[in-house]
Image (cartoon, rainbow, N blue to C red; front, side):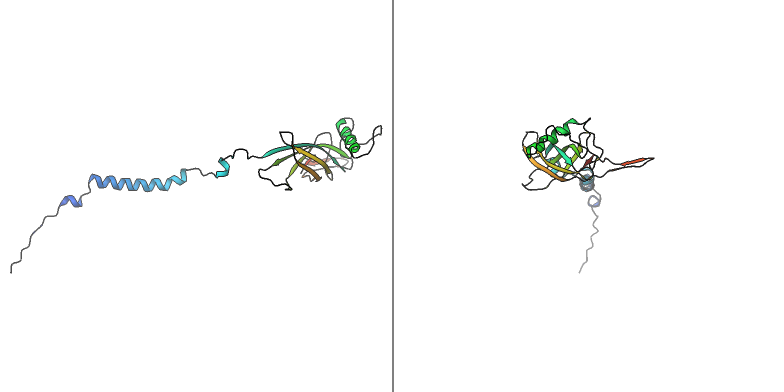
Length: 188
């Protein structure tokens, strides 16, 4: 038996990376790095923040009303004659004749009422309203907003506001000083 040992020379080209292998390695590595950085660079947004459905939007509502029960902090007659006119008109609609009577409106304030009606609001839903004094009332604390229709830009009534006015501010006076925090003539 003969044993033939052949000394094969290894093909050095197989061990040596070719230009194609370098290119593939660079492509895979670059793709991996790109995939890792893309989510960091992309700005995320919710669909509801970037899409407007035609005909679906919030409606701004506004109304004029009276707040009663103000314990002397309401509108004065001299600076706010519309308060007295509104009070007389409201009382007459309720069947009370006050023409020619001397009225003191210190317990009443004329107010503007605003609200935002969200889309898809069902009938009977409650929404928050903002109440702001229109005349020279010094505080709305303790007051009650009387029935106030709230109109949209098209002039139709979409809501009615009524109820106790809650304010975040206060005003206090003494002999030597006075303190006011926030705005006592605006509330919810």
